[in-house]
Length: 100
Image (cartoon, rainbow, N blue to C red; front, side):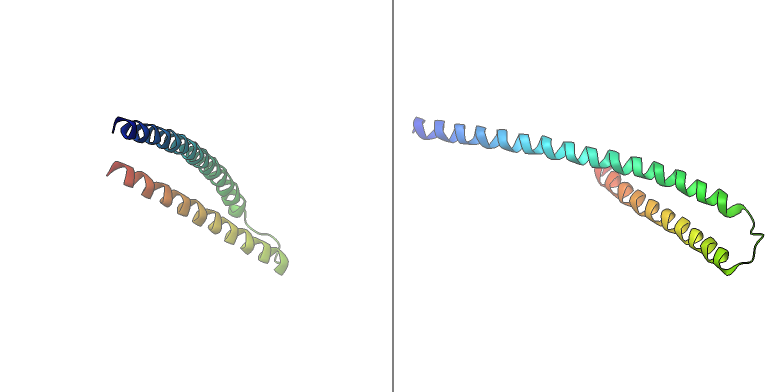
């Protein structure tokens, strides 16, 4: 009986060691992804501000190509904002889950 309990204790200790190792490993991966997302959001904020400044400049040339490029830049600005909002919303939901 004592032999069986000793074997079970050893097996549980090994399982605990493995689960602790993988929990720490995955936790570090999650933290690194979170840092990358935060850095990406900072870059997106800078690009959004830069594009917004460029779009404030009035057009003095009525070429259709320039107008098309101007509209493409506006679309890119909106896309950058959508991506930043989506990533920010996901981050807010995760923070809300942690608090509750």
